[in-house]
Image (cartoon, chains in turn yellow, orange):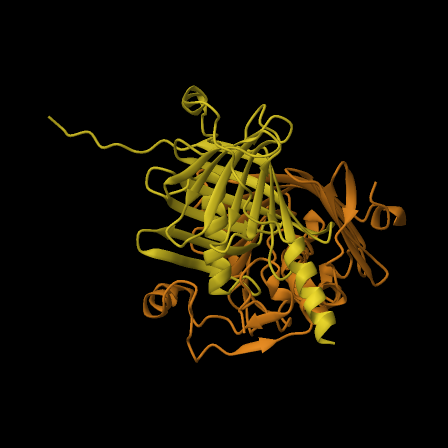
Length: 223
Length: 264
């Protein structure tokens, strides 16, 4: 029985993706030429996406997600509603932390809000942590590796065949999130796939309905 | 034991609702992000099969509400200027079928302009309906002979939403049955009042726990000139409401049963 448990544990560990090795550019010139991929927002935007939720490859349900994101302040507002328009969840994250304005069960867990905001930040904002390493993966993809304050690793990857991707690893090096920007030709946020590796893996497929740049109001002094 | 950390972990583990959403900030400050140790929060295990019914209840939550409102659509001559529920009761009993198109506008603080959806619906007494959105996302709810299904456009085709459960269906059909009997002012879920201004306005206020925290009130505006429902406004919270405007309303025309059975 112990052997079987050990075998299962080994299989589980082997099935988890871990932090890959980064090969440094061969020459100093190559190092200079290496540009970190940056699929991140430069200004404040509002996005409306349909979100298909899937487990084990089967679509479970579809909801509508609204995100208002400002990379300059790192402020995030978000809402989830049914296709029929019923708001299930609404929250905002700012300097004071997370404020949940509306959360119907089962979206009323505090951890749900925290993790949703974290996922939104992972998609739209450049990592806060400094670049620890950059170079190329075994398949030739360009990668820049950031170390976050909480010890997580974030790889921003650009691959000729698969486009731009973001991978978040735990401090122990296990893959937690894998984000793929599937259509980079028109709007990079047109089709986003988020794979979550948790006790029960799931995926979210975001399809853009609307993207609106948000003008930041400036107040002119009266003369 | 871990709390449900991510979107789908709630399949196995759930918690009682956090007392007040506004207090969340306080919770975070006391216990630190992601380390909520509030003893008042009872954590309970819920079986997967029970939880699978939880989301569809919410997902379909608007459908019965909208249908309740729609059932006020009756023939112009009879309904114009109705001032009491007895009159509404009599007139509603004459409704056999309804069909209409609608434009739905979702207003929220997070949106600078409303999110506009368009669609159509069909209803046949006692319990058949089709509620269909054409855009921004194609979706259909069909109900026919105690069988309710929800379809959403995905990967180039209409896919059945497998999370739809018997609970959601029961809620929808029970509401419809009650209102079709003309008990507008006797439905245990809503308190109904009539207000006479330029148009007739029926205000439905949820009572009891079923709509608690979900809907504040529903305002149904009947046009005095045309007599039919002009609009339905579902107010969920301050700065969060849905306005549905109806047009091309047809009462008691023959509707083929296939409309309530076939996705296409």
